[in-house]
Image (cartoon, rainbow, N blue to C red; front, side, top):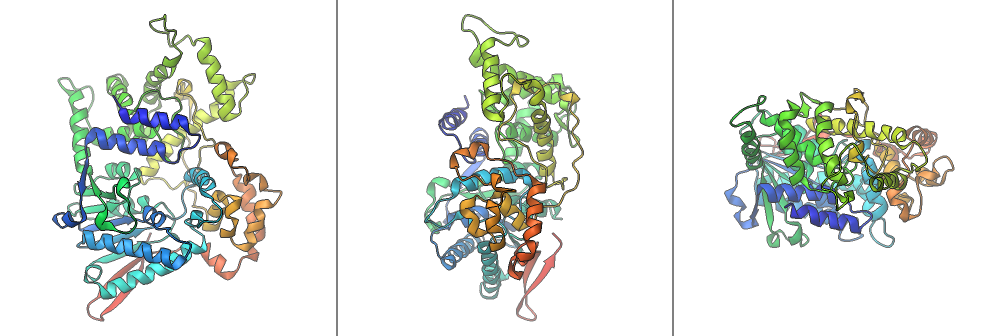
Length: 528
């Protein structure tokens, strides 16, 4: 029994919004089912060799927002990073990645989180967004910190340091995995520090034999005191081996098509995405956890005749097979207790009423409207979203302005006739500029984080509907119309100061390295 799922389901039903809950469920499920975590204390880390140490900064920054004084926050962040480096003692590389501008698909989730976070009288944690003066000042401080550590500390002096700051677009974990994916040596030991569950999925997809994920146990957090923290190491090699053992058994004694662990892993990632991610909503009304979903997947593999995610593309026919099986589970709460079962083809009245209510409440589609016709764009977009995420994870996508146009998924039982859906070729689209992202994600209570020229735009009649002041609308925040917003920003851009214009430009990935001959710290720009 998937105990973690039932805890997750209970909490989710008790709260209107639970940030990151679905992703956390997936993380705990993988941790518990495959037993990939080993606790380790700081004093015992010397036993583990790490050649390349990658630090995802988002968690560290947020954990150290301990005061309203910027200098104290910056000092706390740098102290924590230094303690980590001294604990791990990497031999070749330190790669520090800060979240830059995110794809539009993630901005909808960021927007919800930032509307929730805003609280008057405290430090505005929404400052931790690319484009703010806080992030600009932190980056300046951090580069000085790196320079000084290389100059004065032998651990820092002996390795290369790569810094990809907030002004370099892309999520921190994707910057890290891109570097790992492009690295020449497959035998070096890589360790990523971060607690984002995406790291497990990305690490699986871009596998290296000696890749580990290090994180602090979230139940042992105690400020900057690393000595009192319990750390966890997740061994992705162990997870890969256990997935291989679990699924390769299905090919014995009779193979039904060629076994490929890479394809199994991508299908496994797809199944995890059903339960939650940052880009499209969790599949609604899944009444079982990942245990049951994986069990169904195993049963349908032979019927599918191949992998669901095959050669870089979703096989919609095979995807529909698993949705049909999950759709049966969706109906279970509506079964008549006197009946042994209900035929899939004959929806009972209670189930139909519930479906109509679901779409009325969550997609504003009234019962008297043609619901089947009106939900079709959501179905198409949801399937498109699954393809978008997997392509994004693979690193083969540069379409950064695509997004799912809703906060809820279609119901599983409506995910049918998928072969009629044409998944478009995602066109290359650049990231938004930093100040544009701020306008996409910030609530009006955080408008002071914007340039002065943009602050009053949130009350401009052309776009004021995008910035409601009633927190109760979190579940149905209006989606921002890109063309209208960018047009309004264009009309105000000449009022930006030079410093604000600079904050709106993208920066570069930087390499810091100590030169023994000159006894100086060198810095050069790398190609992102």
